[in-house]
Length: 114
Image (tube, helix red, strand yellow):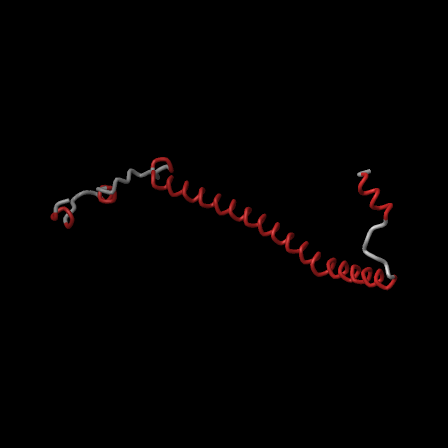
């Protein structure tokens, strides 16, 4: 645009509004602006990725939590009871004078494989 045209305009106000802007009075559609379509597609892909990642992490966290819960129950509630029971039975067997060897009938049964 020449310098003189910037400061002196002899046209109408409508011509001044539309001059050089490329605006024809209508709003463009989404398909007519390729950059907006790319941005929307990147936004949708990113949003889907975040949702999928959130679901995967939730499942992994749930499995990890259940595993730790079961391990803590076994370690701190079941294992001490089993240990006390094993110690009591070992002391009871020693007090009765029993040996750790198996009887002859048990040995025959084990060797026969029945």
